[in-house]
Length: 403
Image 1 (cartoon, rainbow, N blue to C red):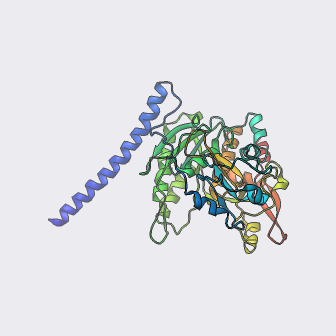
Image 2: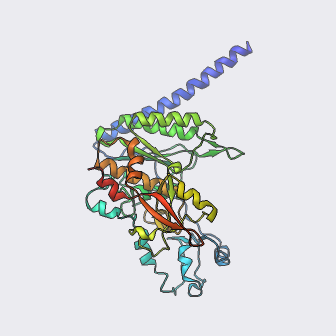
Image 3: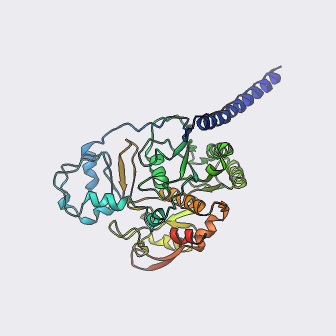
């Protein structure tokens, strides 16, 4: 008798899970259908909430300057009005992270020109703006992001066509907001004309720091179901996930199956496994000039340089960037150093540009095209020893090769 109840309970649980998924898919279809029938272009199912304002402890913020040899000095949400920046070395600009909530002193040194920092930091670099001037903006291309919850922001609020939050957190996050602006931001994004479909998903690790890929696989499949409801001209072509995946992950098989499902729909899934970064030679180095990129990522040691030289990952710029900030629609943040997380939406943005330039592009060919059209740059370690690093992305050459 107990066995029978056990099986009945299992069947009920399975039915509930299936019904939940079925309701989600119906919700997708209803959102899209109602949006189309009412003439709307946006099919957002959840609200985008900004993060709560807060300020960090003032003394702790000031202590960030105690060790000027540190690779990063974070003064976001900080009152540093009592810090004498005229006594600090100029190269500190290559280490700072700050945002619109940072309170500065009344007297600032000439080298800390916030207006100039804002101007340089908002460019995607590598002459992407020249592509925009030619009308190559990713217009009409569907770009999906799976990340932490999203905050509404002027950089991309008109790009958002669908937002679904599967997490317990309702407020927008730094991460989801930043990667979205890098991908499709109207001023700072690589593909400002692309349509953004955003899924907030759980990124779960167990006590042994083993990642569970199942929620991400489910998010990919959800996006693919959403894609089936979209008009042909608005199909999603690329999914950006700022996370790495391996066979060691729990439910890795589900993730691999989701990748195969995406391939069948001509959807390219990009993760941190696909990118590596190369840094500019300081903040004021021209982000559009290839010769500016002579440094390895800030976390690389000299012993890592052989790996950088041999890696076949696509190299992209991520440092010295201004991104949308999660605390308000017009708030921004500046990051002196950017990791692989910033690289994936950049590459996804270039993929959207390519899809616009060649609508019949097979997305599985994008990475090989990016390699064939890439540059080789000489990157120096701390001793000045040069390493020739291949596959540094060249967006203009890539797009021109598609004609």
